Amino acid sequence: MRQSLVVGNWKMNGTRASSILLSQGIVAGLGSNSAQIAVCVPYVFLASVGEIIKDSRLALGVQNVADKPAGAFTGEISATMLNEFGCKYALVGHSERRSYYGDTNESVAARFSQAQAENIVPILCIGETLEQREQNQTFDVVNEQIDAVINLTGIQAFNSAVIAYEPVWAIGTGKTASDEQAQEVHQHIRQYIAAKDQVIADKIQILYGGSAKPDNAKGLFAMPDIDGGLIGGASLDAESFLKIYHSI
Ligand code: PEP
Image (cartoon, rainbow, N blue to C red; front, side, top):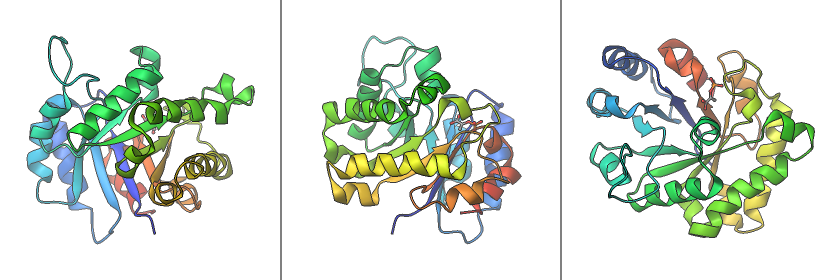
């Protein structure tokens, strides 16, 4: 049985003070839910949020990681540095990184590999644009995004990784994929992995992301191949993030 996981992506929001309050609010509402939960915070809040959540089940994550281990790469943050802060998860290949900051399938694969080298679990974000969906390219796009990582790391690397299926047209737009639309792609992703390794396919957590909210999370999470969610906007409010978490 796969464990469920809900991850908040705070993006470039908040202040140090608001991040502390938000993480305190989430910790206070975790209750007895045994599903896994994490927040991917801006780098500069890692220490403050890490201090708040250190004795709780709320895990610490970030939104990106450098594709190189160290060196003259001005402005980058390495996996080794993140490890020092107790960072457990790193998003790699979020569509905003791919579309605004030039991330390619190859650089995303390198980030994935760097995270794993420091025992940080990469959350590989994949998904199609609206245009690609309309041209029936969804499966091809996610296959290519997964293959780029497998080509670099091998399929065994997915033993300690998470996949987040995030249709680009649903991120931050208020348009959620229907439960069936999301399930169809999640099932495809699991089958695609299964063709390479059945054991990994059965155990890998595949999260849905894209305008998930308290009122639509339950339906999405009830789908057999959806193991939780990557939550953007709704993770900025402790109450709505917790409602989503408790719909697992
Ligand atoms: C995201 O940024 O990963 C995301 C899913 O955002 P939102 O929930 O706001 O669509």
